Length: 194
Image (spheres, rainbow, N blue to C red):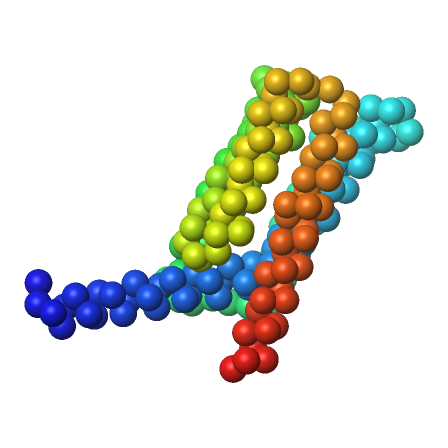
């Protein structure tokens, strides 16, 4: 490998990291959309369990997931990321989303998986996607949020109960919606600087 090849490879890696950082900042809206959609699903589930509502949690979650999907569709149309880094981050979240949909619709929907474990499973999967996004984007603060998701998943698996809905709601606010707002602000600051 020549010195020019090494410099070209290094320049490509730097550009890829910059692209992923930009893509992570674009992703702030997705964090907010999914934080709200999942939060509403949690509230609906709690309301059903507490006998304040008669709609089945499966139906409520289906509506919330469809609403999140529609929000994602409109965000994706508004801000297309063509760079390789953006595609990498998109693939991380798409793989996590597909895994969660299979767990929810097939596992919980068929009755083979107890729905009370959905929050713990979701936390573990979201932790992996947050970790990969933060790592790819070079945003250590975002990567480190994964440890909060994984700790929450461990607690929910170890001690299941009705409190899990509240814990997941707090985690969504602190570890998903707030970072989404921070990422949007980072994107705006980056646009103002250029």
